[in-house]
Image (cartoon, rainbow, N blue to C red; front, side, top):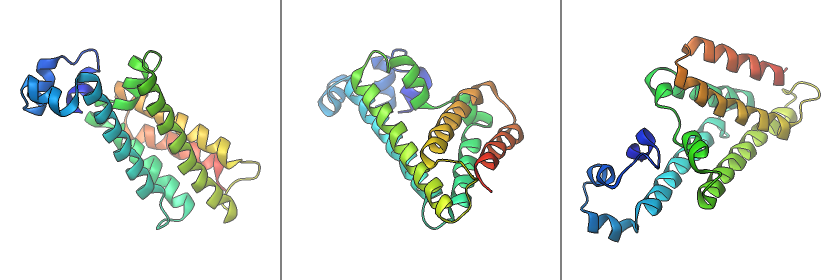
Length: 178
C-alpha cells in the first residue's frame, strides 16, 4: 500500500513492489496475481481501515454531534503536517484511475456512498435529538460533509495549518447544528 500511496499506480514499478513486499517476482505473482490485483487489495485495505475508523468516530459511544466533531477532527489531523502532505491514497487513485478503471471506480464510489451513509446516520441521530439546525436534511448534509473532508485531503497537500483546517471544519459543522 505504501508503495502505491507514495508513487501512484502508474508510477509504481514491479521492482518497487518486490522491495515493498520482500517477495520474488514469481512469489508476488503467485500470491497476488499481478500488479493490478495487488493494487486492488491495497485499495480495499485502505478503504476498510478508513471505514472502520469512521465507525469509531461516528459510533454510538458518542453523541451524534460529538461524533461528527471527532470525525472532522480526525480528518483535520490526517490532513495536517506530514500526513497532509502525503495525501490520501483514495483521492490520488480517484484522480489517476477512476475514469479509466471500472474496478477502481466501483470501489471508490462504494467508499463515498458508505461514508455518506455513515455521516447521514449521525446527522439523522442529531436531528432526532433536536441538535440539527432547522432545514438541514441529513442526506444532503452528509454529502456536503464527505465532499468537504475529501477536499481537506486535497488541500492538505499544500500544507495549510492545522488551526486553519480545524477552524474551517468547525465553521462547516456549525452551519448544520443548533
